[in-house]
Length: 369
Image 1 (cartoon, one colour):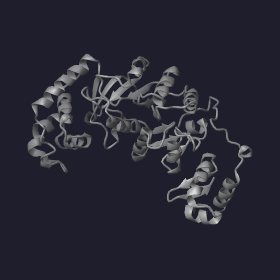
Image 2: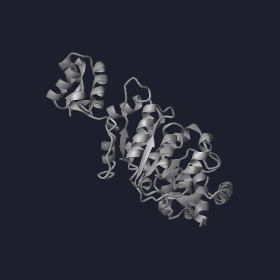
Image 3: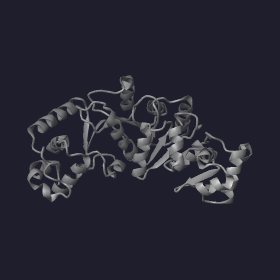
Image 4: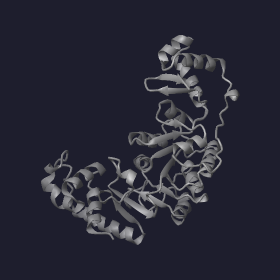
């Protein structure tokens, strides 16, 4: 049932200087969105860090009228309104300081099920597609929910593979429910709901899919799950921001490594090299790390590892031996040992890391595995 609390929450969130964090502060002080609407303009000083300018739009009739129309829109289109301060948003997401004050939801899902967020480039290659297929094939007997952003490429493939293997999936949108972007995925969005999944957005029906909304959306994808998988992404890709949010929230991040010459592996390799993601070496290891119990089902390795099959180049062998003989050696010391400039060593170390031979630590220190 949509009560007046939802009306005041939507109106309050429409105030230009009341974002999610200020919303939470005010509601904690006054007890409800309705009480904030009625009292905060005069009693703002009760809330630490809130000034007169922040509350200046509280009480505006236009915001209340907008909220009334928004509720009508939601009721007409079977959209649920979920308020964070009423503990109605997903549990893990609720732990994030900047979690959305309001979520709009189509469809339903069991929040008690574990979740895995899967993100990546719109320009997915056959390599990324093969990994996604392998991951869902390997986890088809597990009860969990996949989460992605309904974009083309990796997102679309993840949602479709989820549906194929009867795994519920959540799509997090970067706009309101008055539209669907990209329009190519309209049928997919309907299928997600039909197959026991949901569409989520923090944006009301006035919000278009503007560029900045996608970065904002990514924090929900990162915050709703304990783990995020980055399949393929270039330098500066949107998935890098999702990984950054996940790191900030102390979530696990896993990245699919690739050739250093492949543009859509470079972002993943960089995350791994900076210790912002764990390299995915085999699907079996990934599934174990996610905490899925696969003891009854045989797992296929994505990158089968064999000591005898690993042939190192002369450069790799020289650098690997120096690291092995000097655990936690720094980059500068290593450069002196092998008489190679540090900028030429870094790509070789990344190659060794992807081969499972070397592990890097903060401060550009390395050790052999």
